[in-house]
Figure (cartoon, rainbow, N blue to C red):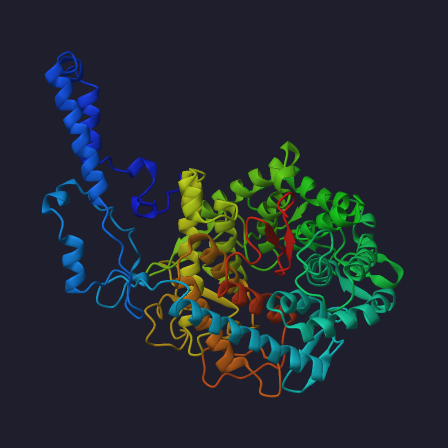
Length: 631
């Protein structure tokens, strides 16, 4: 049996009904009116007089208890009073203090929220702190503009920018992936010039590319291009969408382009002899074939459903959803290891291949989409969709039992791998990709609402609270994977020091880090690709817990990106080695830096009412789709 994760009453709101204290006055009055004294006193005139006198006294005290309001001069913190004001407020009867209710205890704050001298930092939102985050959000917007400028100047129409050599490259099939991936980010940020430029390029060129281009990967094209088009359709105002901008083409242009692309991608499903689609599609003739070796990645075939489901909703054609959902319905029937699955599956047999189990590459977004596809159904969820939530819960229990460990000497919680299955050895390896998990765990626990609201409405089970605790612990680990390096940026892969595994001389380079001996970074794993997973989880956790430390961590990561990856002539670049200064640069700006990393940072620093998590679900490329019945 697995040991439960640490959990204590400090994680509960003090105002939760189970812990709310009754006042002394309520105890006395309830005892008085429910005892024999009531019957005895009310039977005589003297008793009636005394009761009336007592009621009059109570009313008088209540009416005189409220102190007159006093305005606080500008620039003074709330609650600071002069001596003169103190006398005015306290000049009434000192006896009145005896009737005051004992103050509620403040919520317990973590050490991260306390001041250096042990005092609590309480800065009113909408004042200095509010303007600070507005400024920081603007800096993220400026970074997007700088990245878009470099792409537009040197690589417009190519999939990706090579910012050092100032040219474009096509590594994703030649569909102008950066244009489509970045479009909804520009809409959310209000970068109208980029919205207009990207929208015009899509209207003029993308259909022709779809008709004439050759091989593309089903998964990458679906999450980046199809997902980007559908999100832009909604944000432009399609199907009663948000209409964030009036720039660019009409919404129908994005929808019709998405349908044309999806019709060709469907060949990956219809060409396969099983419910598992082939991995590669030739767009110009709508044909499909398996990858070399014949296998598909588990995460790739199970990370298509949000996009195809939403396309069926807005197009009115169920064929897209029907084909994509066959995959998850088939997964339901396959044997699993405590809900966990190997990272390869055969389209020929429909069975898993091998025993390698991990939440990193080729496994990650399978678990993400189980809960998100279920959430996407919103008010239309019924018994036919329950299996997704059940599979998610079973898988998360399997993660906690089989994959979660703690490092030594300082006890960082991490998620390892089982490269040879449940009965094989445990690997203390954790991809940066696994850092999607804290956000997914938090989303699965509260379904997108804040923890405070979920607690108040008694919506969280003990398992939900346990998952939230795990989410916060893992987010801490993901952040330390950044702060432990010389550059403040995470490597692609980290290993963790355990009793069974350690390699010396492979630290991150930041000798002042508390965790310099917990995290091991092998030389082949020291590159950084501008990935979004950690800031994605910081965004989800901030929205759900409202803990400001997640914003601060996000800001530190953003500053490191600015310092070490920004290219003066335009764009941002990947790095070869995050443990050395200055880091060697790789000359590539991935599309997801604009589509995900900067978008999540911008939303992290902004108002939680923008793209609320109880009304939208983000696909694995950070393109938001509305939850059914909420918009």
